[in-house]
Image (cartoon, one colour):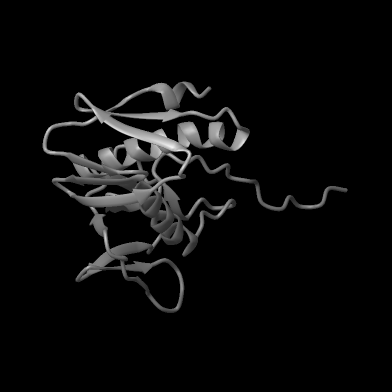
Length: 191
């Protein structure tokens, strides 16, 4: 049995959870999320906590047990605090800017790349970057914010795909804290 699935999900203040069978609706200060889970899951609310239970020990049911609990936890966290992914823009002349709600990336192409956020996602550009480590090529940060953890991760991945990090120079778009191993260039022939 899943250790994560056994843990109860604590409901913080200002968050409402409504359970109708296997459909869970979570409403909080940042928005509202709804998800329908597998019919084998038993989802109950008691004493300001949500508990997930299962009756069957089939492999499929056991595999969904911890996943269901984690998804409910992510819904509660999303509507209460929200989720954020930060992307670093590195490279000479590379920059990001906002055009209304849209994100505009200037990353070495002959044209700027404009990205429109889907509903529930917002972009922010932070150009105040600390220069303590010298000239490491970091120009700005792009913040991808939202209440749905999976959607925030997908949109951040789509932004990163515009110009993935170059393994020879290190320039491009990468997640904050992502390590990119810089490879040596071609060596001249010896002999």
